[in-house]
Length: 399
Image (cartoon, rainbow, N blue to C red):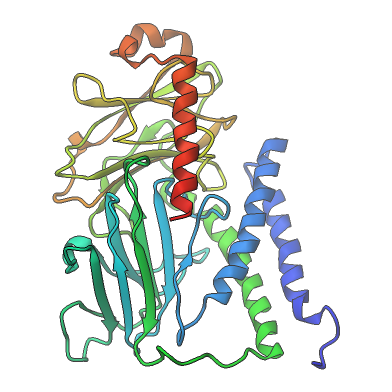
């Protein structure tokens, strides 16, 4: 038996949870019970994620952990993406093996740290699977290691300060695309076993998890101030390289504030798939996480959207149901974030590739929305759309 008193090991984490609840309750956008309830749910997912991530902090015997998902969200998570991360040391060699699925994009990114309330980590290396030698059966192998090691096929240099490998698998067609498989090991520890974790080290884990929890909440409440809330409301930026993001990803961002009798019509070209195999749009809550994308249509990829005859996609962000295929449900959120992503690009995007936005009264949609009649859907068709989302996400989560 350890010498610590009962409760002393977890006390620091328990105190962090109490402080985290204060942060949630004190967030400036909390004005309703829905805001608070969603914040407390966000807190529950963050508690789970912090414990999970600190347990995955394994440099000698690493594994891919799920970075974010439907039930532990952070950082305006993309509804179309499976996120995985593993922790690295820049002086060791790691082997990543896998089998490419049929998703629109598979990408790799090396970061030099984690997010904090004052800065984002730097992206040291980023590439997609076009730079990977993939065999006919879809299998591949990458070796991440110090740049002074003798390179071999599939060798990826780890720049000084490398701390984390992030892998993203992105779906455009939720129904037909299938995920792949991926694993990681350290080259010099495969076949060995990690030593048992003593109680004092478990105490340290709880302490680190508590600090991680508080940093996570503070960071992603501050993050939108940097990139979103200083923009004019109900507008979107031109497409631009994603800050700290992937080399082949562009994004367009904004924030909205709408009455229930108003809609925001966002018009964007359906970019040619040869240019951008993935194009997605979503809403985010003021907690800077995705809205419920399983049971509501709060996001659309270019494959899911109904494209008008002029090659444009017109998204209708609205609280009330307009009976239209490209309705983006606000689900009770008067305010929120707007996010476009284009990935696996083979050229830079221009302002002509990006979105425009217009606020109009709900009742004027039939008169002012181009191709209004072509966008109409019945109640039964809408139910089928939601059912397809529910089935696709469940299937995706089981791989």
